Amino acid sequence: MMVLKNSRGHLSSSCWNQVLAVPKRLCILFPINCQTFPALDQLQQQYYDGARSESYNCLFKDTKVKNVMPDPDVPSGCNKNSPEFDVLPGTKPKLGSGDRDETIAGLLSDISLEGLGPQWIRPRPPRLPIQDGELVWLIPDNNRELLWDYGMCADTSRGAALRDLIAKAAKGALVPAQHEKVMAELASDPKLVYHCGLTPMKLPDLVENNPLIAVEVLTKLINSPEIAEYFTVLVTMEMSLHSMEVVNRLTQAVKLPSEFLRLYISNCIASCESIKDKYMQNRLVRLVCVFLQSLIRNNHIDVKEILIEVQAFCINFSRIREAAGLFRLLKTMEAQAQAQNS
Image (tube, rainbow, N blue to C red; front, side):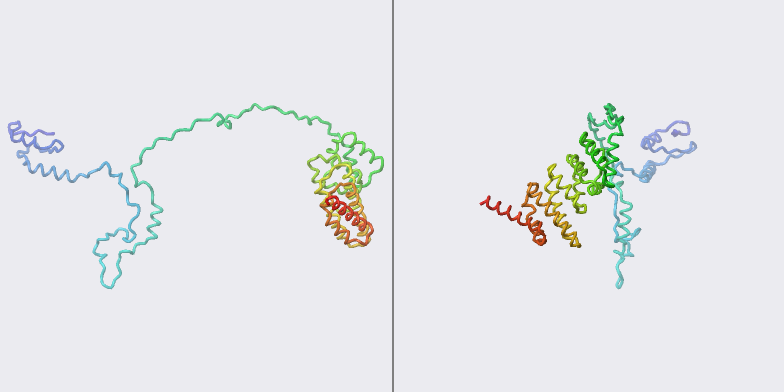
């Protein structure tokens, strides 16, 4: 700031009063050789002009909500109060010509929350307490007991001779010596049946070639979880004398499920009705009738479960003597049951 001096080098009283009247923020510099000082009104006018020219920055300028969707009826960059939008006679109004689809597309692409300032500072959410078992996956417990494999050094040759004989029995009839050896092996160690190599798929061949060995093996497997699969194979296999012999001997050795016997009898009756050869049909009907009489007389099956189906079978083949005898047996047992109930 330069000091205003008179011709003698000192401030005059009038100049001093004028300097005091000028605000401090307005510092007007004059050359040293200037002899005249501007008037007070002129200085104040210069101050007011400079103050109005400065931009005013409001602290709450950014807190307002900005316009997020322009008016689609007014084209972009146009003033709706302009005279060009006045409606002239015989012309369409220009207002309302805005593209609404374009406005919506621009809104969806440019919309954001930036115009909704200020962003309030939110406290960080508290952390949940750590549970005791939460970090088990991070710090695993390696204290595991070692389990000894007792079958690691077991004798793998156990039952090898029995497996060979069972494999031969499924392919053909065994000689008496081999047959007796199989029976002796199964009688000495019943658990060998689980190592004999017989599967449900091989059971039909064993039944047809060596039915007595099949009966012995199935008797030992009666408590096995896989016994249901063997019964399913017996029901679905082709009907024959050997299969009925196996089922008949099994009914005398163990307690068979009633559902299995009912399905097996139904399969026998269906097989008799489907045979076209009369000789083979008569032969199979005789075998089935003898088999059913054995089951009924020994009380291995409830007659009420198969009464209607077996009676229809006997009437259909009444020309055969065994079928007629089975029908009379059913009628006799039915009459005895009615007499007991009365």
